[in-house]
Length: 184
Image (cartoon, rainbow, N blue to C red; front, side, top):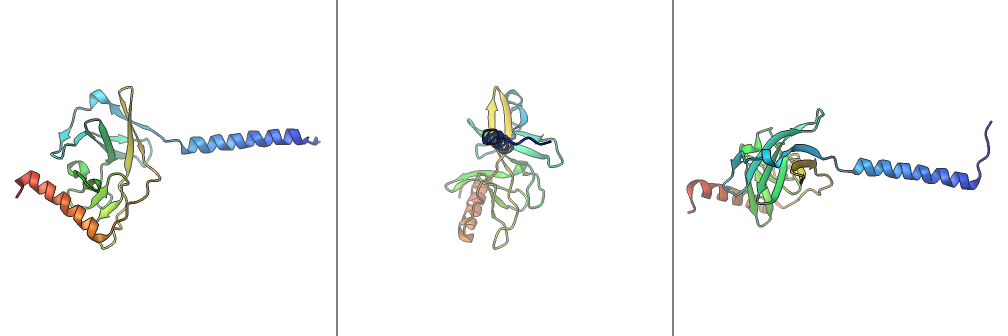
């Protein structure tokens, strides 16, 4: 047998239901931070001539979507990106990471595809319109000496005209060549 509910009881149940749905949505949107290591473990693996140090190349996560992550440091600034190029899976440990007026960019060492580190967008590939998937970038935080990363989400892809993308690629190439052979 069913008992009729008063309007007060119905409103009370509706409020509880709304709170439960709100809590579920909040927890679902909460960032998932993954352990990378401790600050003490991060003696630089390599130092790039552009001033960035590669601190770690480690796997994060615990699913079939796991990926290796490179963590870079310059002073107190930390950047983390997936270790393999989305174009051909090339190891990005030897990539050029450059600061330009337009932002910080990473160039794949094999085919020189260029990625915006802030958004992960491929801003230069040999096609007229870049169709290379984005490079996964990560937010990085240090708490209590432990380094954590979390995949960035909701970052708007960076779009630019072909001339601007070509300029960025040539600027990165010029910097890399200047470091290797000296300025003209």
